[in-house]
Amino acid sequence: MILVLILGKDYKAELERVKRQIYKVSQQIKKLERKEKDYLNRIELLERKENLLESYIIKLRMQEKALRGRLRHTEAALKRLRREKGDVLEKLKKGINLLYLLKEPSVWEFIFNANRAYAYYEKAMITESMIYAYKNSLEQIGSFEREYRTLRDRRLELLQEINSNIKEQESAIKELQETKENLSKEIEKIKKDKRKKKRYLARLERRKKELERIIRKLVKKKPKRKLFPKGKVLLWPVRGRIVRKFGYYTDPKYGVRIKNNGVDIKAEPGSDVIASIGGKVVYSGYLEGYGNVVIIEGKGLYIIYGNLMDIFVGVDKRVRKGMKIGTVGNKPLHFEVREGTKPVNPLKYLP
Image (cartoon, rainbow, N blue to C red):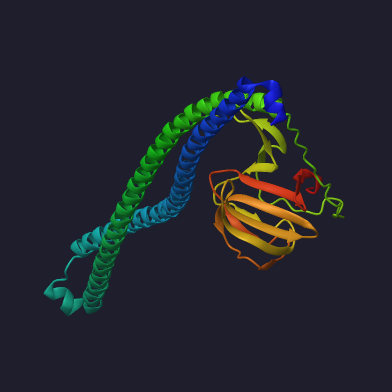
């Protein structure tokens, strides 16, 4: 009360006005943050849907590859049958010609040269038997050929269905990406507006602090140091190449500086991901910002595997070093090593 009397009524009115303005701008920023969070949640859901569609496309392409292999075997079998059919037809023609060329003995030959006459009938019977056998072979080859043609046509239909399905999923992914891009543009507008309002709010806060002379101090406790293993104790989780190293990098889309707490490893979609260390699975499932995740605790370390396509282990499962725990999709595998809660460069432990 004495301070108000000393500074006068104008000072008090200015302080109240600043407080009201701070409240008003704070509410506007909160509204923008809620809107931004809503858009980010929508993008997260779209990304999850996109990941599922990409995983589905990978599996469709694997089915397509296997089907093409079976189709090649079918085509090879048809070619083999056509060759066999040609060979049998040639033999059948020769048999018919041979039968035609055989000269039937006369009555006198039966009387004066009976052996020659019987030899003719023997040759004729053998030739007719061969012609009959070739005819049966042709019918059997024709039956096999029809079955293989039916199988080939069905596999071609399946292949067409798979290709059509892949195109539909790719079209759906394109639509999702366009929606994400539009939402990202809206988020950028919100961030720009937030930055302006936050700068204004910061000026108001400085004025308020100057008027009220408030000093705030933050006390931080230093965490206790733990002992961790030394040396190259981990296995590489997947065969591939590192596309993003540990440490800070500039996001190519938003242009902001972000810290990568691990390394990102690009591998062939569908590749196996193995446990880099033996231990216990402490998390298995979806985690915002990491996609499908498995976290293994072992030797005081927490090993994080993110952006998995498939997960093969559950929580509380004991895993051996080198055991298969999942597969990688189109996105690079995100691989983190943490000493307690502190992220460290995985290359420190990798050979």
